[in-house]
Length: 269
Length: 103
Image (cartoon, rainbow over all chains, first blue to last red):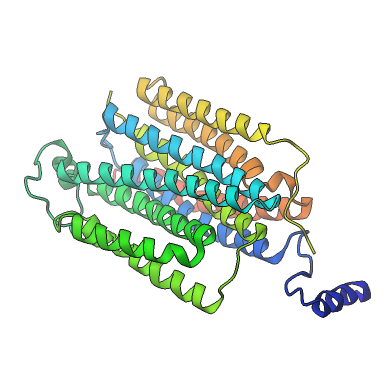
């Protein structure tokens, strides 16, 4: 205890704020905090996955509408997320050896994979909505089909509700993750980029597309990131990169359950 | 200062884990698309594969394997315990609805 106090005083005397931290489970407090958040967030996703499975079990027959194109698309999305986890690990390694350039490069690579996942998922959503799979609150696109998916939406509303609910929650987490990594990688320089993407998305996505409204998640992210960077402008270190990596890998982990449950268990041969 | 988790192993193992995750995903897609098993058995098999994949992600990518034993066990036991409780709440009820034929 006395040694700890001496270390703390020595660190403070040398002006090294944050150099000393009391140990908690052998890790620094930011990491423990992120693990606790992820444990609680896993219960959120767990409840959604259990709700999906609950509906899947008691609803007979459960629709199996996903053709090979959807499965290929979802498989590519999975590969994007898995690859993003690898680039995230490489970013953590680069940050540990204080290589700022490669830390930023690997974080940007992770963001590119994450963005590819969001875009592919958005295209999949738009296609399904256009083919008739929809929820009551969604805008109705011009020329919406009244085929197989429309019948599913009318006959088994649990399918659309659980599909959109689960995948929207995950897509939101991926979006938050990309913004989080953007702030860690580029700091305040990321804010104008995020603003431009939000404005471009809002003006370029047609108003009958659900993402015309969903893109405002970026605006909320922009406001929150601005407040954080204004209140505590800092140069993010290896700890911050590792903690952001924990969040990113968690997003990847959750998809490992959503992909088989939602897509592979509803495959049309 | 408590340093960032340092690993004795090389970067190579992370590429192996990434490869294993891609292979397991390929197996899942093949099983799902070929519909090798009945739906309930398929669900069990896919969930086992998903748990294996998530264990690899948590252990290696999230570095839990390299944390202290106390932190490892505290996290794993608490989260698993919560899921077990949720399981006993949800699934018996879903099965009961099915058996009773409630629409």
